[in-house]
Image (cartoon, rainbow, N blue to C red; front, side):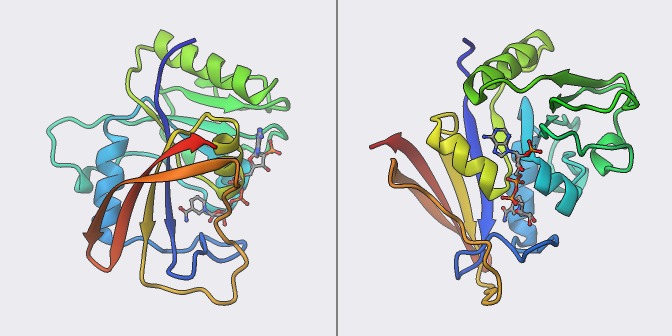
Length: 210
Ligand SMILES: NC(=O)c1ccc[n+]([C@@H]2O[C@H](COP(=O)([O-])OP(=O)(O)OC[C@H]3O[C@@H](n4cnc5c(N)ncnc54)[C@H](OP(=O)(O)O)[C@@H]3O)[C@@H](O)[C@H]2O)c1
């Protein structure tokens, strides 16, 4: 098995919500985006679950305006989507003429471009091992960042896949939202660092099974 760090990155509101139900919600500020895009520039891969794919429709690219470097690198998008909801309209496929996307799916559409590599989902740990191996074969060193949403992140913490998490807490509140960040008692969180980022706070935690 390849030794590769998988870490979580998430933004939450002051009242501990990861957004508003069913829509893309802006929680981060420009400075936090800067940090996230600098991470993206050094990642092997970036992971999202199928609800984030459908609701946020992110490109998962590294945006040049946030990166202070001559050349930029884009992480390989890795979409956990057993039901096969990924389709040609999603932004993540827009840039994939030559670059690879890993589609973790048991129902991937045969009409997707050839640059979409399908890994059939078996168990989570076995699937993660196969992704790590494939990233190595593709010459991708560096960590994998799990960008959400909360369902996938929670299960990846419970299964000891995600061992570190960066949480950006902003000063916005979403009292009507039920999208609370949920962690289980099976793991403990050890604060490694805290820093203020404009109107928010970044905290980095090491995660250990109890
Ligand atoms: N604040 C933030 O930092 C942040 C970041 C990202 C997203 N979000 C928000 O979060 C919301 C989406 O989050 P969500 O919790 O509803 O969904 P999600 O975590 O994005 O996706 C859930 C999906 O991931 C797949 N999945 C979950 N557990 C799995 C497992 N054990 N093995 C394999 N696949 C698994 C399943 O898809 P299949 O059943 O299709 O396989 C599941 O339906 C959106 O509103 C989005 O805006 C917030």
